[in-house]
Image (cartoon, rainbow over all chains, first blue to last red; front, top):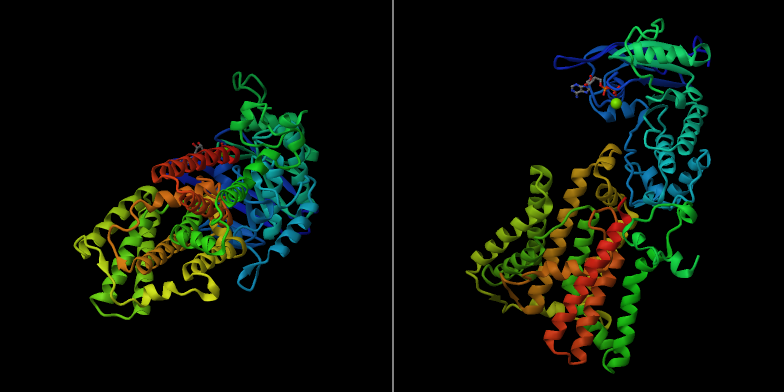
Length: 261
Length: 342
Ligand SMILES: Nc1ncnc2c1ncn2[C@@H]1O[C@H](COP(=O)(O)OP(=O)(O)O)[C@@H](O)[C@H]1O
Ligand SMILES: [Mg+2]
């Protein structure tokens, strides 16, 4: 990951968002490279969800600009972001419980042969995609309702791979999972990075993302409090950024706030 | 672990809990009880056939079995449509009224307007398309729940049928349509051919076409389908047009077999249809169900009616048996629903 040699896949420059008079985001700027995981951390209300909704085309931005592969983009709807190679794995995963894994992977983009769907090709390619992931599924013919939380995450992530997106946004993928399942899902995130994708990982759990993120962007009250390479930072520094929005703040100054770990 | 245990029978909680992977199920295999429930409708059909076979010497004859097919033709055609609607997470309760208005329209076109039968039949099918479009407009355009929208539309449509014949049944003197339905290509009644064709086409569409896959997707999780790029409004339109056209086909069959058009035909037909569909184990929440299972449900009802009649069972008791089957269908439906729910 030599940031200097490759142009960023995605860059945000002075992005802001107003909801009427409520300012949810202010002057958010960052770059995202292929093959890296950028964790976005921040307390509730920090603006994480608003940011990813802008990146995935759900919201229009109020200020600033977005560039994908150096090209200015404006997203009017989620399909616009998808067309630029940005895929979002939503918190609810957006899977059809009653359908099997392959049907979910190819929902909305089923292969066809003449007037019919090409079932054989979809089952084959579904197996190939899932074989490349660290979470194993019993079969691509199992309906989603029989899968565990981590396996569902694997299907949602495999959908991204099948769709060919190169920028993947994941909203709190481990929020509803136990420790072991979370561990497996974070390994999936690393699978994505190793496949050359750029991943934005939203979380409010520093411990969980610490081993997964290459860089950590901390948001505080709608601003970027700081962006750190994980290797050059410490847990203490990140925690201070999350809690106080300032790495030099000393505990006690801001009252008796809880450290979100 | 005992065999009963593995069936989940010893743990009452598991009767009501959906099957989630746990323990030996973690690899996504399904419980034996689920599989038995899945096969239940086919096993019931086989059991009924075997029972009536030994109970009546007339039952297992080619002629009688074809009679069973002809008797369930209209219910079956409607049930195929209802299955597709329920898979999409919708309900179409206009189908009975649709039959009535279609039969009236065809009869009026042939008798009062002097049309020949083929264009009159096409007009009847067009009525089905129109009803489907109106239902789509109410459900998708206005956003009314399909149960309410189609229940109300059904009343309106039957009202139109009653007004257009002044409440009278309109007999056909041009018998081209009844004569056509009397034909037996390869010894099989035309209505049975139509029933078979409807189920084969429905099965192919639902299992092997993008439209079918999208219907399952939209019914299972509409917002996920939308976010995946499925044009959900078009899917709903396709579904309501399908149920409308199939009901109109049922109306044309009814007109032919009764040699008349009647504004009171198929009153309450939705209940027979729902019984058959629920027997097939469809989930009311949408996204699941199979047309082939509905066909089995239709045949269970047909075999039951036919067999009880052959055994000269008093028609009041037949009514009771039908009611029992309906209750059974609902119970099976509820169990299936709980097993799928999270
Ligand atoms: N649709 C909205 N309308 C008005 N205010 C909003 C809306 N969405 C978010 N906000 C506000 O923007 C701020 C950031 O929220 P959000 O992006 O959800 O933060 P996070 O996801 O980090 O918890 C909050 O103050 C929130 O109240
Ligand atoms: Mg949020």
